[in-house]
Length: 312
Image (cartoon, rainbow, N blue to C red):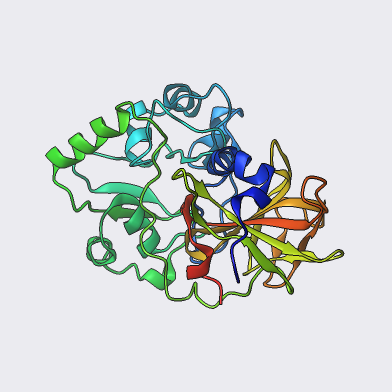
C-alpha cells in the first residue's frame, strides 16, 4: 500500500514529535507470563509501606531520592534495582521497581531478589544483565517453573564489581533523554499478530520523515470501524491524552505494548484483561483530514519498534 504524501498528513506530521514524546512518557515495560499474573503500576504518591517492594509510576515532581525516602530504602539500592534509568531525567508515567526491605543489591552481586507476579528467570536475567543459567545455578532446587510470588532468590550479576559501579555512575549522569533498559530481543512468539483494523489502508508507515523525526504508523479505515487488540493483554491506559485524543494502551507478554490513538469512543477500562480481537475503541472522524484515522504504535520495553515486524 502506498504511503501518502506529506502534504496529506496535515496536522499529524506536525504533531509527530509530540506523539512520540507523549507515548514515551506513558509506556514502560511490563513483565511477561510467569509467576501468577502481571503486576500493576501504582502511584508513587502513596504511603511508603505500600510502595516498598512494588512497581510504581513516576509522578510529576518525583525523584529517585524522594521515592527512596518514601519507601524507606537506601537510594543506591533503588538505583541498582532499576539499571539503565537516568536519575536526572525521569519521565512522568515511567515505571520503577521499588525493592522491599528484604531485598539487597551489593556491589557486584549477587542480588537478593523477591519474586513478583509475572516474573520468570529469563525476565529477571534480562532486567539485571545476567543469564538464566547463572540464576538457575545460584538457586539449586528452585526450578524456573516453580517460582512463587514473594520467594527470595539469588541473582548473580555478569558484570564485575568495578563495572557495576561504573554502570551505576553512568545511570546518574545527565543525558538528553530518559534511557530505558534494553528489553532484549522480541521473542518468536510475537509474530503473525493481526492488524488492529479489519479494513484499512496505510496512510503513513512507521519510520523517519524527511527531517529524520520518527513517525508512528497511521491507518485509515471506514466509518463505524473499531480498533481491536492485536494480542491478549491488560489495558494499562484508557483515557484522553493531549495531542492524541482518546488513547488505549495494552500491555502484552514479553514486555510488548500496543498503542491505539485518535480514538472515537473508548470501549474498555484500565485494568481490563483483553484477548486478541477485543474491540478497544471506535475510530473517529477527524475534521482536518475528513478521514477515519487510527494512530497505531508498538513498543518493546517502552522502546518504539516497527509494527511490521510483529503484524502479519
